[in-house]
Length: 453
Image (cartoon, rainbow, N blue to C red):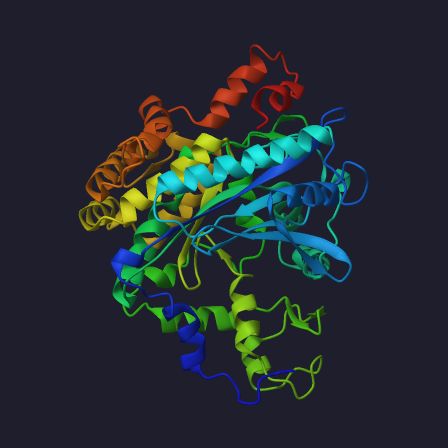
């Protein structure tokens, strides 16, 4: 049943501005996806079957996870931590396994949560003859080889995606990412964080580039995942030039979201296909598919999750530019962005790196790093040089944060792998290519053997 009163602009803005919180309450939320595979065949697991995705979800309930259903299908798990904060395990369209972690106080907690999750997944997967791999793009299997998960929204998206770009189905079925979610203390702070993180997103993309293979051979990219986003759906992806314009704030982002065509609305536990429809019209009760119904705040929040820019605004900011990778880089992404954005001097120093770039620089850099990685250039500098500066800025920010583990070690250690990548100028993807052409002698099955969690 729709709300009795129509949504106002204040309601739309409030869905994002409600995230404002004092610095003392800022948290970090980590998300990461990974590919499951049958150890005997390397094929992606189906939903059903003795060693399928549903069996994985069922097996994980022994660790205190509760099942979430859509109809008769288990499509997610949820668990509260000691503070009563919820983490979830959910299914991406091709069965990619995603942990959406609880919002936690520091990178130590994030890394512990992620490590515990991976340990639990491995215990269940070992019993099912499954493995899990962290890369940005499926290295082996074609779209047609990927089983589709039984979630209603995915059927709608699969039908709509090919109308908007040639790689949308690859995004759904063959990509995995790591994401970092961070808070803000005011609208002005949100704007500053959004601009800085959006401009630096291609730098992070290069540091985490880890998807050089498609269907068993090199694909010409260092991050095929990032390339997919350049031809998925121009209505809902990209570098959002308006973020850098005067007057940007919650209201301007709401206007952008209103203009992005919808995918669906959920009514009575079922997804209604509203692909291509206008949310503005939905607010006015003008959709023939739902006659007389007005959009609800839940509809608006659902709609916000169907926008896919490089940085996304909800009640927090989501940094979305990194390929999937090993446990160490899941932790490293959180350290990178917390170091840059959760310390005021570091955030100011990071903005100085990018403040002179224009929208053409942002768009060109976003595309160039997909093939060139740290060798791309912008503003007369290489991405490698900027990455060295970015990591150093993050390192100082984490030192200033002074968040210590039980062993009295601060968060800077989580950046060590990124320091090595930036200093060497060699991305994880290039290291994989060296192995492929060297020790592996073109045998990509070694990736599954040597790099599985």
